[in-house]
Amino acid sequence: MKFKMFIKAATKFKNILLLAVVLGVFLTTQNLPFFLIGAAAYIYFMYQTLTDPKFVKEFNADVQIEGIQELNEECNRLYQNAFRALPGGMRERIRNVYKEKQALVMYYVQTNSDPIKQSIVEQALNLVIVYFKLMMNYNMRIREINSVNAQKFIERINANKKKQEFLTNPKAVEDLQRAVELDEKILERIQNQKIELEMISSKLDYIESAILMFKHQIVSNSNADPIVEDIDNVINEAIALDNVLTSHRNEKLRL
Image (cartoon, rainbow, N blue to C red):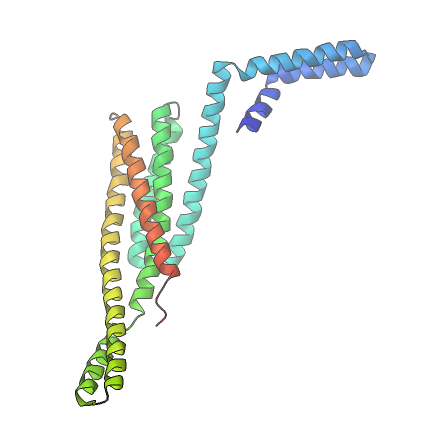
């Protein structure tokens, strides 16, 4: 950040013009004292530029615009990847979110002079990015859970319980009981993960509604101050959910 600011100050028109004059005169006359004085003047004017509140404000605005452009490009990239990978129903969901994102960006292009709304658009883009990542992770987790045949564990549990009725060897009974308990734990884990996925699906619905609400409040020129914190909260929730899914996917069932 500081390096970018330094380069922008160094290449500001009045400063670069001064440097060009100093270098031009020095190359023509080889007057070293003049060059040293000119260099000192250039450094002084650069310092003046760096401490100028107007310059700092313009630089921060440029940085924010660049950041929003980068976030928008990231949104577009994730959307394209997700659209290719997701099934039909999920495609429709991310398509709707993408349309809302596009509307926000178009609005931003028209009203990028409002720093508060700039900040909200920036955060809303962060939310869209997290949403696309979460949806991709959610879809992969669903496929993994659905690929597990829970019925085979139920049948094996029932079969082993019946076997226990005919066994007389205590060691054999104990081993069979362990097998039943392991299968029951796996079934419980599968059921808990399905419940968790239902909860995350509801959270995705909530995020979609939140994006719509943020867009409406910005476009309708409602008071934007209170929703900045709301966006932060939604983003943090979405990131937490995505981390949960990633953690579970890394520890996926090996059945």
